[in-house]
Image (tube, rainbow, N blue to C red; front, side, top):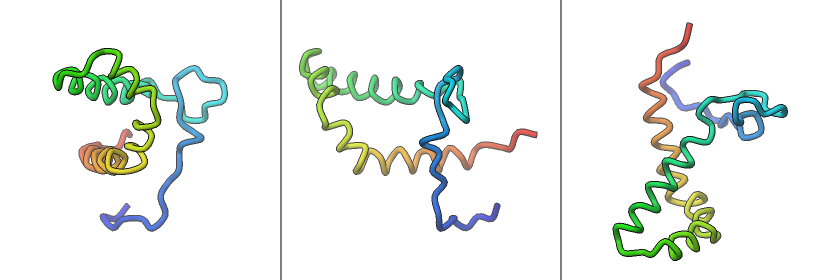
Amino acid sequence: MSANKQTEQLDISGKIGQLGEKECEWPMFSYDRPSYVLWGAVANALHDRGWSETEIKDWLQSKEPRFALDNALGDAIRALGDLFASTITKIS
């Protein structure tokens, strides 16, 4: 593949899933791990800023995480994925 960006994005949202899922076309060992890493980091950062466990739980269970993923947080994660992909070599 060339270094030029493709004009159409690959949508794998209906294909990926946890290893062992019957309906999953592209099972992954680490499917859930990014979620635990991200939201754990957010929870710990909020705790460091003085938020109580109840306040953190309430925020995580609100629509705010979804709004964040639809905006700047989603953009940052996509950029991180693009950066990380540049370090991966093909599996033969």
